[in-house]
Amino acid sequence: MTSTTTASTDRPAVPRRPARKPRRPLRFRLSRIAAWAVLVLLMAGTLLPFYWILRTAFSTNSALFTGDQSVLPAEPTWVNFRRVLGLASPEEVRAAGGSGAELQFWLYLRNSVVFATLVTVGQVTCCAMAAYAFARLHWRGRDAVFYLFLSTLMVPPIFVLIPNFVLLSEVGLLDTFAGLAAPYFFMTPFMVFFLRQFFLGMSSELEDAARMDGAGHPRIFLRICVPVMAAPLTTAAILAYVMAWNEFMWPLVAGSDPSVRVLTVGLSAFRSGQPQAAPDWTGLMAATVLGALPVVLLFLAMGRRIVDSIRFTGLK
Image 1 (cartoon, rainbow, N blue to C red):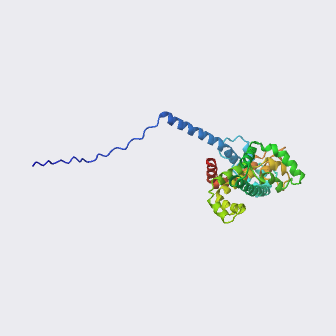
Image 2 (cartoon, helix red, strand yellow):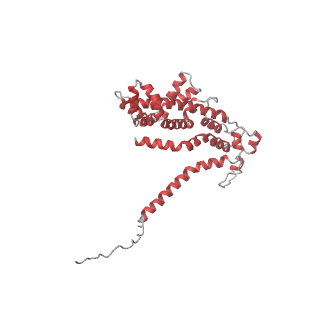
Image 3 (cartoon, rainbow, N blue to C red):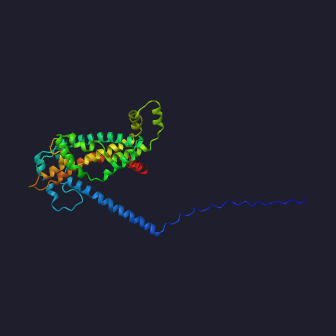
C-alpha cells in the first residue's frame, strides 16, 4: 500500500500595494482652476461695494477727497456712527467735515420695524391660508386659478403703483402705516407658491385622522398644519421681513410724512437735503451700515435654513 504525502504549498501572503488613483487629465485640472478664478473674481466684485461702504463710513469727509489711495479708511474715526446714533455734538461733526443736517435714525428705524412687522405678519398669515387652500382642498378649477394667480409674477410692480396710490388716497390711508403695508399685507404669488410646495408634501394621514374625529378645515389648519409647517413658515417670515425692510419705491410714494418715513426713504432724504453743500458721504454710509446690520445678522443666523427650504421647494 502506497501512501502519498502532499507537501504544503501555503506561502506567506505578499502585501499588495494600494492602487494608485488615476490622475485626472490636464484639461480637467485647468477647467477647475479657471472655474475657481472666475468665482474669486465674482466674489471680489460682490464684496467691493461693501468694502467701499465700510471704508467711507470710517473716514472723515475732510480726508475722503484728499486723494488718499490707501485701502484703509482715511483718518479712521467713529464719529460718523456716533453722529447717526445721536451721540456726537454738532461741533464734533463739523470738525470731521460732516454737514449739520439731522438724520432721525431712531425714528426711521422704528418706522421700518413697524412696517416690516406688519407686512410679515399679514403676508405669512394670508399666504399660508391661501397655500393650504390650493394644496389640500379639492375644488373645481383649483389648478387653473392657481396658475392664473401665479402668472401675476410677470406683472412689474411699477404697473400697480399709481392705481394703489389713487385707491389709498381716496380712502385716506396715505402717510399711515396701514397704507404703507396694504399692498403687501395679503398675498404675493411667490410666497403662496413657496408654501404650497410644502403643503403638497405633507402626509394626509394626520388630516384623515383629525377629520374622523370631527375636525374641520380651520382646526386642521391651526392644530396640525401650522405646527408641522413651523420651519417653512419661519423661512417665509424671514423672506417677507427682508423684502419689506428693503422696500423703497412704495414707501417713498405713500409715506412722505416724516412720522411714517422708513429708513430707506430717510437715507434718500438725507442725501437730497444737501443740494448746495458737498455730499456728506461718510454720514450716509455710516447710516447705511447701521441700517443694513439687522437684516445681515438675520441672514447670518438663518441663512442655512432659508437655502435648505428653497432647495427643498425646488425639488418638490
